[in-house]
Image (tube, rainbow, N blue to C red; front, top):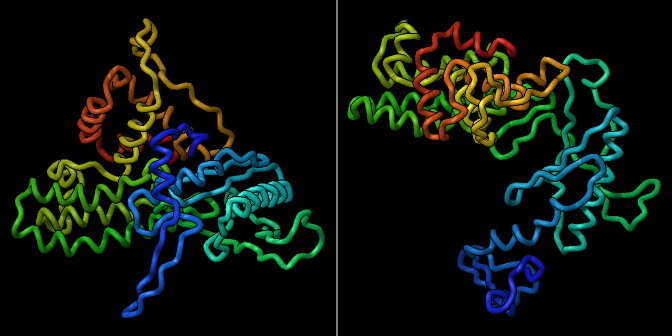
Length: 360
């Protein structure tokens, strides 16, 4: 903590808080004896998670071969890339060894049962779609690691759930969309119950809290999936709106969204992609920035159609396209969100799909 700038009285307070702490455990009617905590922090303390983050923060500073660590709270992912599978596995094993050594040096234990690895590749590409049967070992034996060792191999997974998003090996997000659809369909009973006691405005408030908040979570990541994969999700969204507003089964879709004053799933993807791109830009009042044909974002040149479904391409593509029709570059985030929402509400299905023509 001293190396992070915490010195003097604040450091003394932490030393006093962490030194000679005792803790006991109750299981049912049994209460254990008090034991002194030699390492770690008292369980259940408010400051415990913050101290843990300070403790493991150095993992993000480790130098990994063609890889990097992505951390959020106590969830850590290591990402490696290479031109061949053997190259990727070699780098992954080397990088994982570096992290495992750091954990042992800092008196932390890796939970092998909760540690998995997944290989990402393009679907349909015979050279990359099927990874060779390599293994990654969680080494606990002394270095250097030579020949056969009894260390536990990590389990390979075809999908992983990271921060609430189900990521599959082809980055198609099919499993995540299916899980999202199943989760939302369970809400129809709630709206069927409360529609009798709430007015339209309060029903919309409940919709935004229970439905749209779920739809928009990380939508900039999975929302670029092919439209055929989003059909069931949009049908579920429409079914919830029809139940909430007491509309018949064959009520026109366009009128439904117009009356409910909400955006479709595809329009939500456009909105949040634009807002994310807008937050990344630095406003510069130059003569060129006020021209109608001004492109605020320099787009990346990507080689595959699959890569164009992600924010790295869609952010700049959509922002430059919309900014020519609805100038938002000079607006604040709140103003741009209000302006874009009003603009997208009046787009019909064909206009929305035309805006996303690059990924259809």
